[in-house]
Length: 220
Image (cartoon, rainbow, N blue to C red; front, side, top):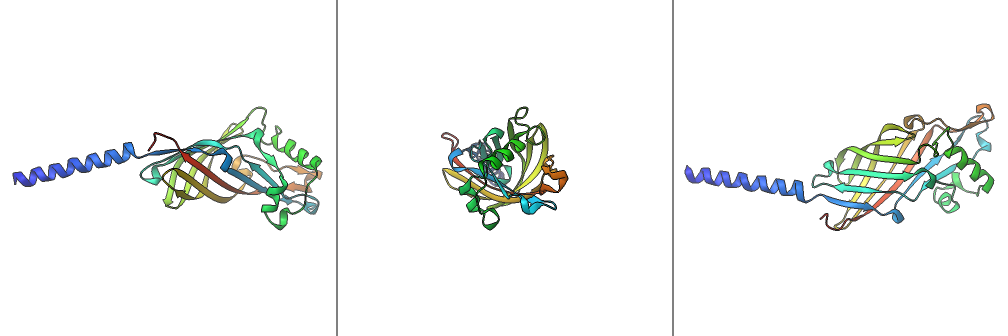
């Protein structure tokens, strides 16, 4: 009995040590690769005069942040920052990637007008709120297809958004891609309108993203 008791104790100690080492020593941190990461928001015209409006591609290619991948993926965390001033409107190369609805070039005047409206105080209000933050508060699902539940801090307010993510992990790299549909209202925003509401931006926005990360040395 004494031998059995000693064996059980040893097994329990080894199991506890193993679990502790996995929990405390195996989390990996990945720095977001700004040059390889992007977000695109697709916006559509709406209203009685929508045929006179444009389909817009709003892009961000200056994303920064850190992803901490835990031994259990559901315990991982994500933190991202996007400078509002860095949003780009209707880059012709990106428009071509989005298919027939986005074909054709838009004049510099119209691009500048759209960007001014977007950054103005009635929408993103860049002067008062220059940064958008995305901070995970939970992860659901199983690898490689996860749902990242995040708090999005936008125009001084916080909103909860579920980001579907296909996650690919390697020893020294991280890649998450996803697509979701979300309304302006879910982000506390009001779609731009003109001509007394006869021309507007559709409430629904399509978001696409790709977040690439490289291993932070020493976090293995």
